[in-house]
Length: 242
Image 1: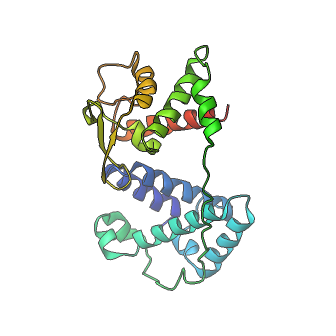
Image 2 (image 1 turned 30 degrees about the vertical axis):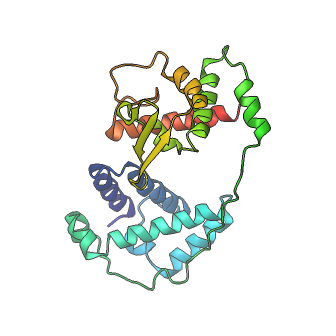
């Protein structure tokens, strides 16, 4: 079986199960491997050999990417190998069971590990927060929305942006915000203090009434909602740098 066909099936299964980010990861890793190999038709049995994987590992470390990004790619390659050799995974995807042609090889990745690098902790200074709060951005609505979003996150105890963007109107009861983490499902409760209401009120101004999302970033769920989230996050990160 060709690598791209395999990752297409895995990506479609992830989409069907609602794992939209995982679906994109399969496609991204497939493109990376094909680019390294210089061959869009490379097969699974060509990829999953010690020689190819060691070369791919060295290629990742030689590229201008962070060491943690290299770890991500190798872990994703291991995940693909598990998906096409693990009996339980294959049972959920019969097409791979029939066509992958691979058997489990626990030792294949033994010499391929790369140590991840701890992410440096960074903090925004009190002076920066004060400047952001005081800045008059009324003449630039997009930047004002970006600033208000950042400051709201800060005031809500550093709520992750994936959780902030997915907040629902039903999760805000008076001054109490109760939501579940997108990553873990863990419930979180935060009191919305006066400082947060200033930013929240501006973000809510003119927000569509026919959506169950609290903030003006998403209008739907599922696959289309995930695309909306990715677009909104890219725009937000770009504006933060301005």
